[in-house]
Image 1 (cartoon, rainbow, N blue to C red):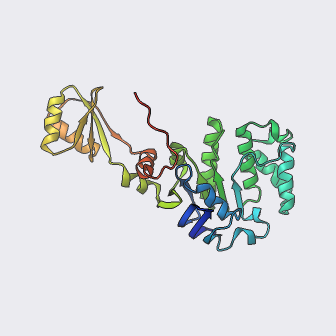
Image 2: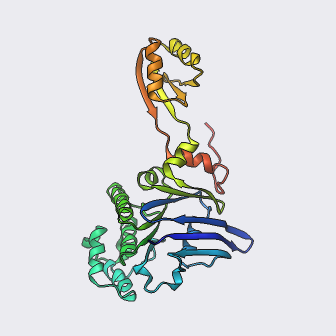
Image 3: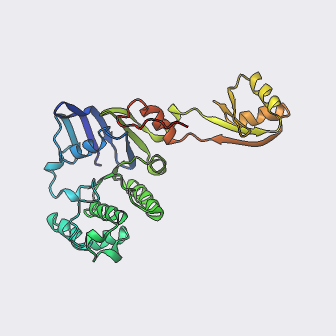
Length: 306
């Protein structure tokens, strides 16, 4: 089984430290979401793993080896870093054929990945005529060309239509089910939550979190229950007797922190409080991410005045 291992990696560009003593591993059989604000060092780290940059110190290896030492690397590692990388004057098919020849891959793989990524009908068109979503699909086709054990994708959902987003989500899950090592960088929190099993989060080049996604969310966002009633006073008294923290909202519902639906429902029933709505407010990855990275955002707009 092949993992990605980043060990005490630092990368400096002059006086700027883009990656700061970073250590984490990406394991096979799961999709690892790679998160962080703009400028956090995600793209730099991916470039270091792929040998496109050299670390100032530390090591970044794939299966214990530097990417540059891998023979016919497309057979081991597939990557999408830039959807604009394909030459615009080539057809999609010719772009993939050139990659296949350079890595001694059979021509049939070109047709297989064109079908897999939904590009077969457009394979004879020049890349410059492709939409952004089609270029993304072509980049993903190139990453899959060598049937690699390790896949790294930077913002793979960028430019995809809703059907394409559903497709890439299922593709990532399938790759993980096959035992491959999958690292996906994204700024789309809701989308990442739909496919990631594990998270690695960076801020200003440093590791902020390396944990299963569910643990990441539950450690940072308090569980809450939403309840609506026609007798707010009775609800307030019942909750206060149990020292539950309840917050009223302008449109008539209350939120109860650190509580479960069954506990609030039982309490309301015992107190004879009429209940119009009772639901759990699920914690989201976006909430947990913003809570963790609020102080780590290098580029942030000022909040707008009302």
